[in-house]
Length: 140
Image (cartoon, rainbow, N blue to C red):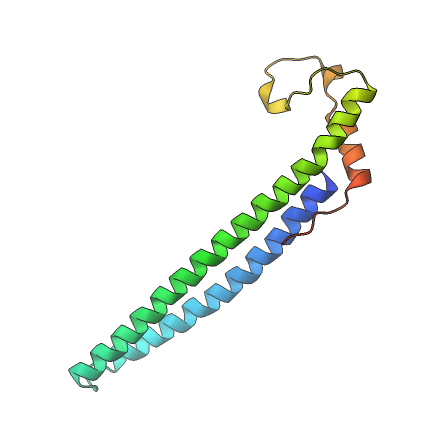
């Protein structure tokens, strides 16, 4: 599936989302590190109470960042799974139609075969049909 046009479009779109989010989170991390250095540098200037308040606020920001990052990663994983499921669901009728037209009783994934005749491999034919029918899968 990763070699199909739709599979490649899924991978490309997910890579773009991942790179965008990675850049965003790196910027947030950089800002948090700067803020941490500023708080540490104020330790001797601020009263103990003020310093503890700033530390608590900073810890809250760090925790919010971790939650946000985790949610984003989970969201991208969910989008990937939904897209792969959609592609698989689109592939199933193509396989059924191909099997019916060519009088094939079983279609077994390549990963499940240890040894087999090369002429029994229909991957390229299915890939051509899939590419002609489905160019891309929209991510949600």
